[in-house]
Length: 237
Image (cartoon, rainbow, N blue to C red; front, side, top):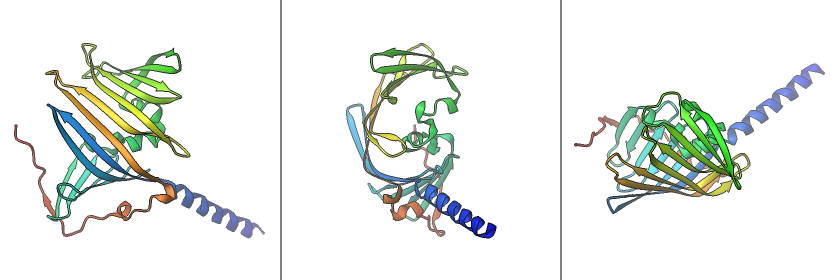
């Protein structure tokens, strides 16, 4: 009898973990629009994200390039036409910066600020909105971050420099809801450089598929073993 119980428990655990790991995929199409110096750049790509932090993107214009990155900041970019591979590593590549990763994880409450060394300084309520202020352990480029919430969801985030000037604004709009989290399908970022040059960047997510509906073969994409490794091109100043 004990053997039967153990067998039932074992099968239950297999079923439980199999379902947990099956509920970790998200795919989406993204339109990236960037406006700078009155020039608008538009890019279309597809993204394939898994909860362990692995993120694969497919850009098809002007050439097909498949990128693979993870939480560690490892970055692979494979040009399918040229059979060329670029590899680099750095925190700027970490998928912890990817909105899908942030909103699908426990860090969505403060958009990952706590993991970056920020702490909550205070909060106030204005009508239906809650405004929270976060400060870093050490003031370098950022002196504070102000975040506005509505219905417990972040709708705005403002970054301030040492002089107390706001140099970056991010708006989160048009949320859609999944069983375990909500996600903003439009993210608009307005940045102001030290020379007071403004850049506007908007991410628009569409065709979002979750869990068992996310079945693309790109989740399991492997870069060919015969890909030619080339150096990262550094733009000339």
